[in-house]
Image 1: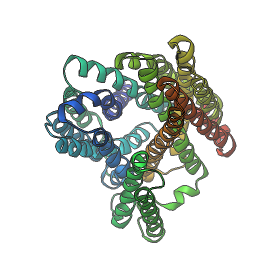
Image 2: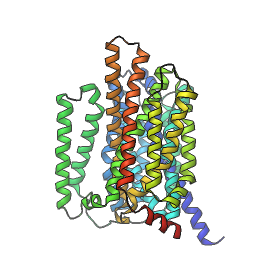
Image 3: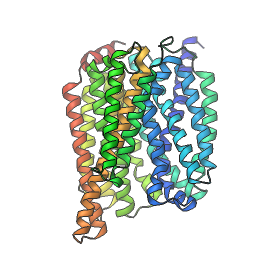
Image 4: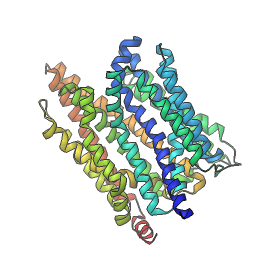
Length: 478
């Protein structure tokens, strides 16, 4: 067998292992949602404290993405990936064995930290393994599929494990996966030094940005409960903005900044991150609010909710695993990105008219189908654009930045849309409407706002991104 084909096979195997590690982290964001009622009953959580099973994870995940990416650039992406997998797997064991509220919440926070490190360096490892544009587009498609499909597998698996065994198993299932990913990564991934080795870690920047992001996520996820204009929410957001300003001042002055501000002078990088925020806000709306509509209005079981997402995920899989790369090769990044986002917006708009007595075939499937096609088309070009103008020594950082944009967009979007839905539902209930009708009207308003986010993202992609034609030509030559 010629050595090149062996090398080739090894790289694709390495990609599969990286994606398995990422899948474990993506699964964990949704698998828990299905098990929350059982966890609440078993460990005696109140309605308000139960939120922390999700929020502890979100907080440390959102807070440490940037730092994780930079540490990968400094100390080697493989080393950090293995460290992240180890942390995540050990924290999963602690979650699975938890018999108290405090232990579960603390272990979830450590899980978030491990997850942030894995997510931040996985993209860089993939970009470094696949340098030829055509191959890179395919590899990013596989990665995009895992990120998109993992969520619904989580819902299905969560329903299955919680129903058949107990909620502990949603965490314990990570142990064999974590051990396998660790062993295969050691065997398959090249042990390269960090691209930015020898530079110093910007500690001041790391502390300020991590604190700023964590405070912002905390304020957002607690905003509904504490009130958006409450002293707590406004002061937390205020402190977060001040810390972010201090961070920017530090970055403009230190020799080896955590986040070189010149990155944002690259138009594609800054545009892709703004699109990432809006896109994640729209996608989180679809994922969470359609799940609520299916359960609370149409009376679906957790298992049926998981199955309802299956068509969209199968379509995303088809796009991510080939169609999307072909579209990028043929049309560049800009066209498929903008068109995909418009289709996703149309899917959300269809959900915005789903009625109280809706049926799956008429009111859910058409929107799901459009969202599947749109997400499948848009995700790969968005990731490629976000990483396209960046030198290899800053790939971990650019990956951390785009992941942070998705994370913050998701958290912000979910908070805003949940507030929109809650306000509309509350007003209708106060006016004497029946609960299903009030809930449905709230969800419809949220879907409509989500659709607007997706349209704005599509317009930004069409107007501001550049270089699609040149990229497409260079890919065709490659």
